[in-house]
Amino acid sequence: MKTLIELMEVCEQDTRTFVRGGVANRFSAWRQYDSEQEIIDFIQRIIRNKDNQANGFIIHSQNGLCLEAIVAINHTELFAEEDINISKKILGIKD
Image (cartoon, rainbow, N blue to C red):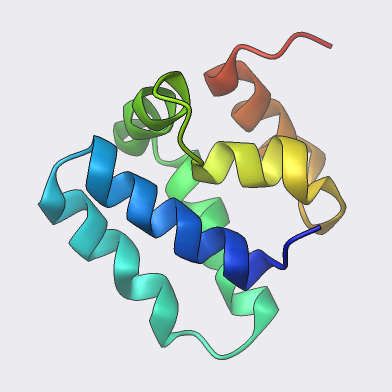
């Protein structure tokens, strides 16, 4: 399984590919964080912001890797149930 940082790098590139460049430029702010917990906090802020949720859907629908997939599929052990539920809803994953 890829590390959180490896997945974030893929997610950043897929964001640049499937969503406007400005979104990817803002997304790249994750690189300023030194610890895994800071990156997790960054992801939580992004996925909980309703204004950003369409981006995850767009990326996922194009078979790209979005933050929501990192949370709901790749590293559920790092996130709160609330984060996983938000992510599943955006990805269309039913329990």
